[in-house]
Every structure is written in C-alpha cells, then in structure tokens.
Image (cartoon, rainbow, N blue to C red; front, side, top):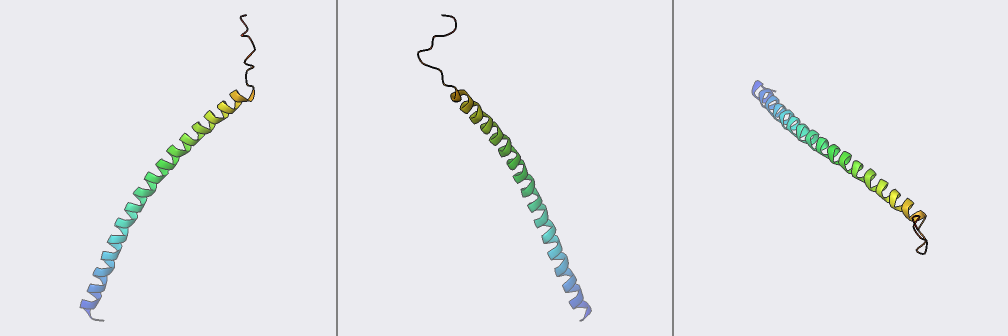
Length: 72
C-alpha cells in the first residue's frame, strides 16, 4: 500500500470511529431516558397495586345493608 492509501484508510477509520462515538452517545441518552421512564412506571404500578389491594380488602367484608350504625 502507498502512503496515500494508508492515509485514506486511516481517515475512513477515524470517520467510522467518530460516527460510532456519536451513535454510542445517542444510545446512552436513550438508555437513560428509558431507565427513568421504567422507574416512573414501576412506581405507578406499585401505587396502583396498593390501591387495588385496599379496594379488595375493603370489599372483603361488605357491610350488611340492614345493619345499623354503632351510634343507634
């Protein structure tokens, strides 16, 4: 290979490396955003599950419609 060919090859390799660095940076940003969204959704899911458990527990012992309140 001639010096010009080596220089061209080196230039292309540097171009590819620069492109890959940029792509890696973009992918890292996406991962950070997805992680935050995942964490937010996880918190919301836990809250919803807690609400559902509370609703189930409150319906587990339904009140007798004919039962008088304690102050009667």
